[in-house]
Amino acid sequence: MNRDALRTLAYRSGALGLRHWWRHRQTLTVAMFHRVTLPGSPGAANADPTYALPQDLFAQALEFFRRHYAVVGLQQVLASRAGGPALPPGALLLTFDDGWQDFATAALPALGRAALAATVFAATDALDDPAGDWWQDTLLRALRHGARAAGVWQAAGVWQAAGPHGAIPQETPELALLLRYAALSPEARARALAPLAASGEGRQMLRRGQLAAPGVSIGGHGAAHLPLSMLADPVPDLARCRAALGPAVTALSFPHGRYNAGCIAAAHAAGFTTLFTSDACLNAAPGGRPSGLLGRISIEAAAITDARGGFDPARLAAWLMHRPVARL
Image (cartoon, rainbow, N blue to C red; front, side):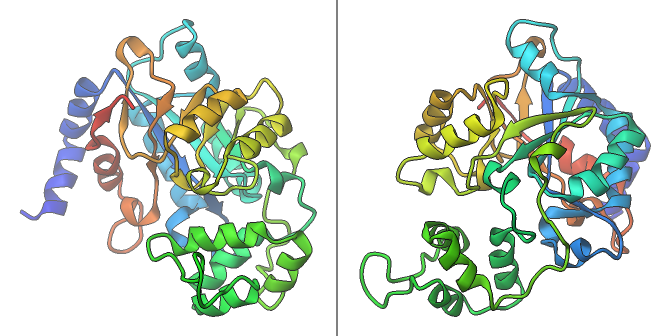
């Protein structure tokens, strides 16, 4: 019997779920999403497939969560950390990064039908940007679709043949490119990106007024959505993010999953007390009380579908339930 068949058998027999429930009942699982797309929409055509789920797959994943977990909201997590009611066994929190418009059009209706809460970590500069296309998506989409890296750097007017920033960093070229474009004035950035194809989606990011929705909690995701550990000083970005969201918002997810001790200190200085990473672990929550630094598991189409692209609950179970338990 091959591995896929064994996994399916373990899931269908209930053995995998029971083992997970018993061994990990004092954990908090945090699921991380970015985009949920409608079939045939421009968003479905444009979104990075690594970070996007079609709405039907998303809805099936929600039913899986309802069956196997106690889905909680952000306020329950925060309250448990502050000495309030402990989290229930097998707790799971749903989170969305960036603040895409299709959270409102595709994810929120599915969440409503499933009667589940979720948290949106919003990049606050994008909330008030009047542009339809988010400049970061325009840039990264061009790279995904074959734009030559050197040409994109030259278009920004930042390519140098020599000097400390003359070469494209090999480890994180996309992130380095984002930093270069972010340093341009809005006008220069718009000129550099003008030759690149528009998404055709209309407005890509949520507006500030769309953040208030039943069952939705809000957290910060930085102001400029830049990798904080690559900034000379992350404090101004985080302070601007907190000011935009207001003092009641105390949760933050690190943009691009990048953080270090300095970023944690800067987040605390800005008033964010519960911090979410992209470290793919189950969070130890002894007595139903997680720590203030939490890992999350990205829910990706490739990890939850079978060979024909259909939803595979056994794969999703293995994707989530076999993760290490950690207290970051």
